[in-house]
Image (cartoon, rainbow over the protein chains, first blue to last red):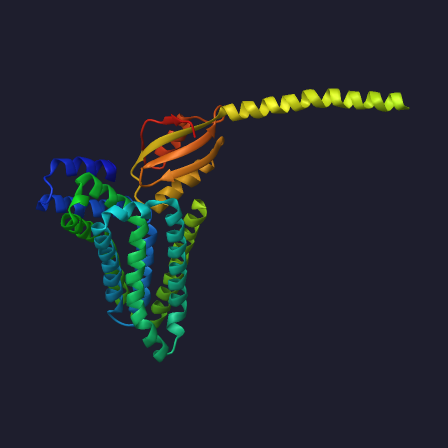
Length: 228
Length: 108
């Protein structure tokens, strides 16, 4: 069963505006994460960023994972309320800009993963805040290119464009469903990294994070090339 | 000498004209073989899906251009009939994990 057929079957059988319809939006978000080809590379990227931050400062990985999660939820909530404009985000031209943007952000995160441990403390302090904000932006931009199509279909099938309020609530639940897998991946990666007490492991995690982010950057660059 | 040059010119022209016609016929045959089809696709969620389908179809022998519409959930494929077919294109998309609807032939 595809996400499309699930949405069409589920939404048509459930009355709009009920708790069930919001549950469907939540499941649709999780399903979109399960079938989307971007989930695997992005999950790897997410775990790498969290691991990279956790080795530098305890509990910062959790903040980074939460920031990424809220980036997804807030973006999709905003998009749900402006449902009529969603179509503009589904063009190939927009996809090209999005893919190159994701590649650049991933490469920048890789650079930080490699260079982070070598920075002196005052410099690291300056980088800490943008780390959380950067992760929020990462989640925000990520959901622009990967979650709009199922959300658009969900709103179209539910005919929610007519009601801004319903569109808003559906988008919130869809966003939570879309973001939860990444939040879990991030929290798990943070937990694993927490046990890496020895400096030799920290360095290994840092190097693995950097390499993983380079792979993620390469993946999105390849997506960009395929669209040009 | 002049006769030889005149003969040479006529000979070259007599060869060139049929060759030009043959080339024109081949071009028109190729053009008449170029077809465009729209295939509805279910299951695309993101730009990566668009990129994957596009890349895969572009590599098919006989496919000349591909445009994937995420909003309309379809792909518009131009191909050379004889080298490939809508069935083969549908099969390729299905192999990628998407559900393909009935192809609709279109005039560009």
